[in-house]
Every structure is written in C-alpha cells, then in structure tokens.
Length: 176
Image (cartoon, rainbow, N blue to C red):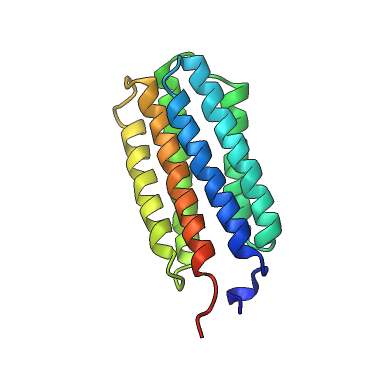
C-alpha cells in the first residue's frame, strides 16, 4: 500500500533520481578542480541535469506537489544562470552559490515540513542545515576560497539530496 496517493512506482523512480543526484554530485567533485570558467560550466550543467531529472521525477512521482516543482525550477534556473552569465572570478561564483544555497535551504525546510510525518523528514532537515551552513560560508566571508571548495559545496548538496530521495523510496510503503 502506498502512502499519500503517490504513484506505485515511487520507490523505483525516487531511487533512480536519488542515484542520479549522487552520480552528478560525485562528478561535480571531480571536475571542480579545474579553472573558474570550467567551474561555471560544471556547476551550471550539474544543476541543469539535476533540475531535468528532478522535473522528470516530479512529473512521474508526485505531479501535484508545488514544492517539488519549485525545487525543480530552482535547479533549472540556477543552472541556466551559471551557464548564461558566468562569473569572472571565484568570488563571483561563491556569491552565486551562496544565493543558490540560501534558496535551497528555504525550499528544503518547506519540504521537510510537508513530509514531517515520514521518516525521511530528518534527511531533509539535515540537508537544509548543510545548505544553510554553506550559504553562510559563501555569503559571509569565504569569497576567496578555491574553486575546488565551491564545487565540493554543490556536490555535497546533491549527494545529500540523492541520499534523502533514496531513503524516501525505501520507506514509502506502509508496513502491515
């Protein structure tokens, strides 16, 4: 039996989306060691791909969830922003990443509130805390950190999101 009227293939779809986020996060860590322009491209592409996967997952899993659509749109728009308006230096990227994580914190807290009855809510709260910490570091004083650290920030958020989705897929069924 499925909770909350979600589609019957929620488990497989959320595992697919979660695994994709883990892979994208891992690739982002590896490629974040390149120059500023490459970092813009890697972060932009990672966010666009994650946004596309999240949009597909939302359409297949929970079509009526406004918060899921907002998170998908958030990933897509910031991905486009990074690709269309690349920053000239690492400090510019860090400020943009800080704004991304500030909005990600808000959206993830709303999602945690929506799913507060499920055991996966703790994953979303942890994700929000990590995103808030990264936003704090990015917006208040770490503008001169290396490109690799910025890529690692984005990768950490994608990996935690992926883990939450994987766990969510495992626990969605009501146990008799």
